[in-house]
Image (cartoon, rainbow, N blue to C red; front, side, top):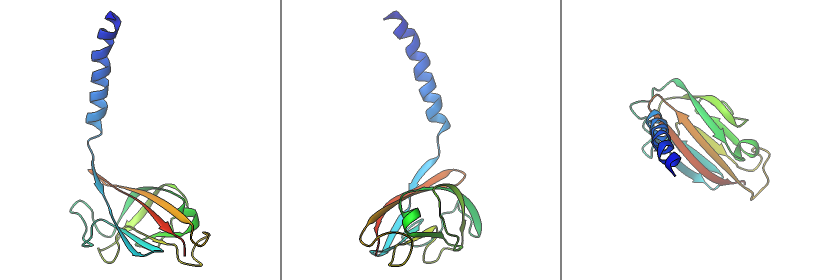
Length: 139
């Protein structure tokens, strides 16, 4: 029991340090479900860029999910995201969609009609991590 009390302060300080090092803000992205088979992921409903995001710039993203292999997922610069993991995407001027579009219409991607696919994305900026998770039905 005495050993437990000597280890506890050390363990608590390690946990506190780990928490302090991870002080990035987490902000949820806006998912605009245009149709049952097309979704746009933007920073917000208004289509404006946050003050910490520069337009006409590249940002690191981490993407995962079955929509990558079964639908067409592409960024504002029309670059197709075709594998999960870390990638860079182009953020253009805020328009109809800012980050990515998921297109699961008939004849887009390798998906089967009526199957449901998912996509998770994290966009990493200097002080904020933007994230979204969504599901989409293939046409």
